[in-house]
Image (cartoon, rainbow, N blue to C red):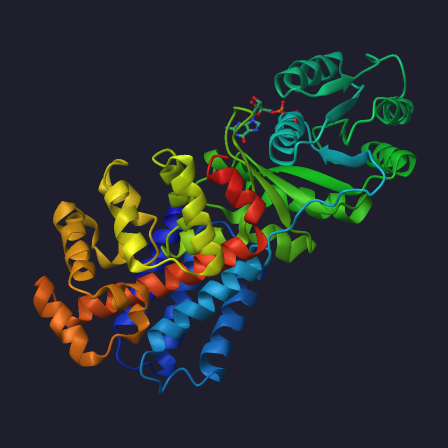
Length: 442
Ligand code: GDP
């Protein structure tokens, strides 16, 4: 999967940094060299790499990290924050027009996965937002393109407005917009002509369609597998016609992730969606924070929640959702979840998704005994302690360690992981209750 190689290298570098008691400037420099290499090997744009490592380095040296007690952890924190910002910062929602239909214009080169993305987006909006969606077939260069849109549009449950190839694209777009108004559609997604390369004619047509239908959002689909070419294409589209956000397609086939890591920095426009397979369901809102966490091995709690949903009944899901929202999720709940997780499949996979826990259990040793250990620690706590583990004092930590046959360090680690997890849960539910409800299978 995407970012695997990068992830491995960054984690190795940061683990090394974390293990040092103190850091010198030359330690930081050495770490930055490793990070630079890892990013370059991931095919991240050269200038982007340079500015990224410069920023991280400045922050590491400037924040007085060097003399501190746990400098490694702070370096990891800085790398994480900068990675989130590199991937686009906050995740961004599509804007909807107060006067429907909301018009979304999709641009992109031929073969980029543009038509597929149109259908995937239609399905996504239909299922996640309950929108009625229509598609406008304005790629009139090739009859096959119109035919393809008809086919995938139908699969996505969207109405497809097409006039074959009889009319110019701009006229089809205008006509489709009228149809969408008449039919009371919430959203109209306009598919535009793809070419093999960016050319003046293509850009002129795009601009003409844009002026005719005044979209809320112009999206550009680029093929992640083409690496820096995708970024160049985005730059050209940006200069000639402009766009608001990127659909990064074929991320499933891209092991390096260079395009995804460069495109925001180079074009100033964020990735809104990730397309990760040939099926219409292989499409997600792009979350920079989650992606950065995954790259740094900080786990992917939401993915965990997603696989957990299959084990939940609806009441459990609602309870858990409420707890996340009120920040009432405790170690007791965690224990309950963990028992459920054990039924979910290969432990290594499941645990890898828990922030910190994956790293705590070093690769080869991930087995049920490790789960037993975490369970034993929690069971050695009082109910009060399970609810507010941050309040557990040193002497109690020792008792808990003894009671569970573990070490104080392991107890501390668990408490830390849990707090981090709770923070993520809280952030997650702050902006996205609707999404959560969807994920929990409502
Ligand atoms: P268009 O010419 O830009 O409209 O591209 P298409 O939508 O026809 O896609 C080109 C090819 O890429 C098709 O074979 C799609 O099935 C495939 N494709 C599109 N998106 C993805 C994706 O996210 N992952 C993978 N693996 N294949 C994709």
